[in-house]
Length: 334
Length: 213
Image (cartoon, rainbow over all chains, first blue to last red; front, side, top):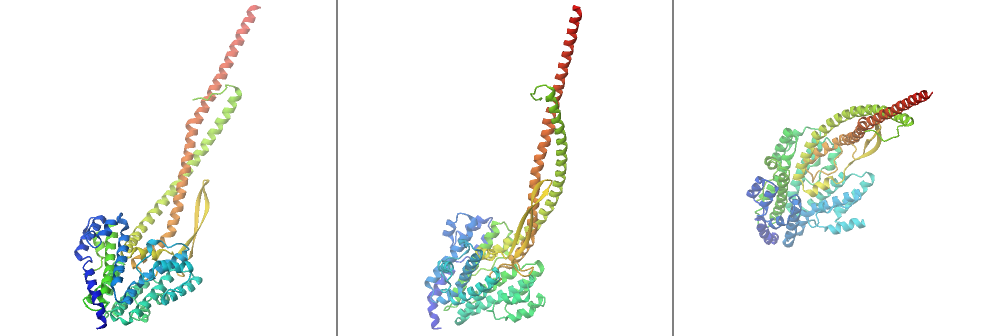
């Protein structure tokens, strides 16, 4: 506990930032807005006011979201005492940049600036791009370097873009869990995340009728539901998955998610419930006064909020009926 | 309107030949137009069916794509699909429809996965399941889209050709043929007139000669 007191200041700052997140009322008002512009007007009364003012075209609302993500990470990096935690949370953006650059290299063209995260990840984008220009990956963190080498070796045999994603996703989760080893809360969080990804992957592989070997390749190793659990289930009907997971924390996610799949043939509800599960998990720990919980919760809440805004904006721009938007909306953190 | 020509017997012969040719050409072009029309109607019927089918399937695929787009960030979405896994090698040859050269596509699926279902160019950890269905439909639809492109281009070229042929038929029917036949009539009349006047002159001369004796 004494060690954790270093978090006290940071937790206090996070509490302030939390107050600026969108609340349920604001999200509902966005949802009920007549059009995209009106929905954006709701944001103009919030933390996003200046960004909304600068936005010239409603269709470019992604710029606003990217800007916000960048701003939040910049701000949190300034005061957070435990760099390892931030490193773990931002690692997925490095992996994303790496995927884009590797694919662009495979295609023999430049990666478009729009699809990279320039200032969010741990490795500055410029540095990453320089590595690609010189084809020298020695400065990459070991787990990523290994992944890049593995991809390079596989590429010469058979160029497969999916392989890039699979290897890097796996490297990412291995690394996350290793990083989180000394922070039990974070470890628990990433384990849940890996489990949920694996369950979703299993269902998708079954739906897409890919073979068992493929399933073995795409499952992440990080979760505490073992790979063999899924491979054993591979030849059983999907319903068996519900029975087997009935006593796990994911019972509700799987039951409701699969019920919707059987009824309507889509996994929308599953994805929503999985996101909500993770959010609820961090939310239930957010009042911990000394520890990383508050920050993990806050960053997840920001990502969740950006997702909410995106769903509403895409829905409004394309004139989707509100109920269709609503069934995809995730919970709100505060 | 008749043409301005010298009313000579030689000119008459020449014009008659041209008229003959024009009538024959007109008949041929008319046949060509009718046949083109028939082919065109077949083609657009096929085109309509194909387009309706494609649109029927494309619409839900695009709707699903939109929803996937809503739950994934723009960056992840672009990353997921920036590198397509399957490739179509397209070869273009020509097909002759009534001497209209329309492109004919033949294609072959190249590269990509080992199995039929192996078309997804992205990993599963960072992507939404809503994308899968959309990609699957779009991928199945690709051959039909190519066929549609081919049929629509052919219909387009055929329509141009029909337009051209029809204009030629009309020009022959309403301009050249009436003009020629009128000119032929004019020359014939002129020649007959000349003949008659020569005859009367001859008779007159004969009378004068006879009166003197």
